[in-house]
Length: 106
Ligand SMILES: [Zn+2]
Image (tube, rainbow, N blue to C red):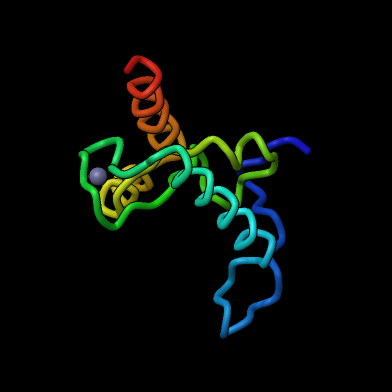
């Protein structure tokens, strides 16, 4: 399957108890979170904050179609996560790559 930025993947039917995220996403998220904790991610890779941490993807969740994309994450606090998600997909991917390359250079 190729990444089509104009056509979101179908979502599971709306469930008021679980929000709109499919069960498969919850499961994948738990696995990723376990890996992040095991790797010792304890601070935001953009500002260094140590609380309200989250995993940020290079593309928005609805455009993630492969396991590799799902695993391509950076650790951000919620403020920085909101910051990189503002604006265009191109801006988001660019900021993601900058943060990611800083990690690889360290
Ligand atoms: Zn931050």
